[in-house]
Figure (cartoon, rainbow, N blue to C red):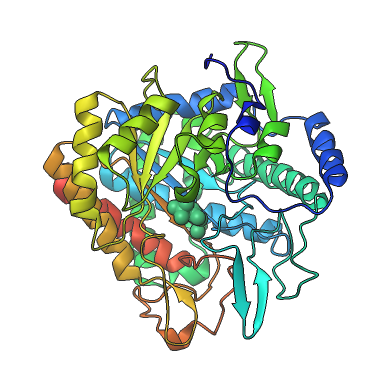
Length: 450
Ligand code: PEP
Ligand code: CO
């Protein structure tokens, strides 16, 4: 157990990126309510994810972490969850089939609500408003009233997370994710794209392999490896009062786990060693992620490894680099060397989204599909050069037919962004772009590493 740590010890450290709740009494009441609710995940599940991630750290598996930038209270529906899951399963199949290694699937979902912001305020014409920090805090409408933080939203986020996780568990264990349904995951809007057609070919190959297995007498109907998948949950552990309220002692090991999700990560803006976020997350037993941006030095990264994972447990720590396409290759090589030479068994994952965001001529926050691919390619080249394993990707996507990122096989342009821009925060890949990205990622890794 971490030294001098308790679920509330973070309260003695400087904390960034927190909303200013208008009424402490109301906040306490909401937190008390959440603290009395059941955990959303169980410690044993977090440990099972950690052993999967240990395989990633060892170069024997791959991590696919994907979902919304910010989940929305308004876009909460079975349809939305199913489409997101469908595209994650499709990407995982492409990666598994092309690379021949297991893929650990971790959603940015069932709790990914709170957003850090570069500035405390944003401008709407002449109007200056507190920046939008996610539906767990307030509504995004550009009015003073909508932006007042409301603690009831913490409770609502808990309930939405529980319902989302319930549906994810039902889909992944109840037959939807069975391998003999790979064709059916290819929803129409995705299937008609070049990547969708390629996927269909791959699904046909898998069907043939399943028929072959059945012909040899194997029972493919009941084998759980072919009928069920594990999709784990994750989010940025930003609002520490909420995370503390869901932190429970595991009765089997006596250790503390943050039971709001299987995996929690620390954002680029809150990773100071002497800050509250590192203090809180060092003490919970879940697998932990940490975003690493272009300003991080090797020494800083080693210090994060020492703080979060002093016991050097493989799979405990995932370093998620988010450098920008033009900085990634030279930027991460010294970090890869430093961590490798220090003997820290980390998972390296590439977030090709957050270093490649820009405001387009039409005023939309967007990302170019080719820059996203280029960052992954640079990440893979850097790992190849240093003899380390490019363990995974961390992406923002939706299964829907949105127009938020430009490029891809459809060559979405700036003029198309107006058509269906729905993200409440950062621009996401749509279903077609996400599947195309899986093929491009697999090709890049296969040509360098396999
Ligand atoms: C995010 O993942 O949505 C995010 C805000 O990332 P970062 O902390 O890397 O900027
Ligand atoms: Co984001």
